[in-house]
Image (tube, rainbow, N blue to C red):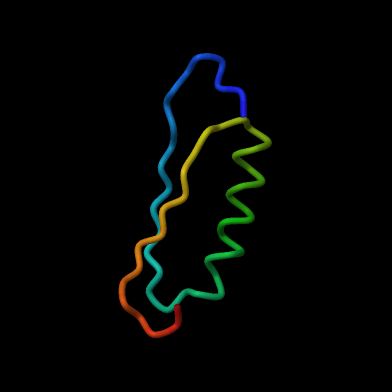
Length: 53
């Protein structure tokens, strides 16, 4: 991804409390938008200890 010298990055933080099935869908949708808009980002998933992941 070309940032044109800009080293800023958006951090998207997602809590994963019983959301194992939704995380992939959320990531795919976010990734598509960020790539289309050429926005550099990181996707951080916080494991909360729920038993579904």
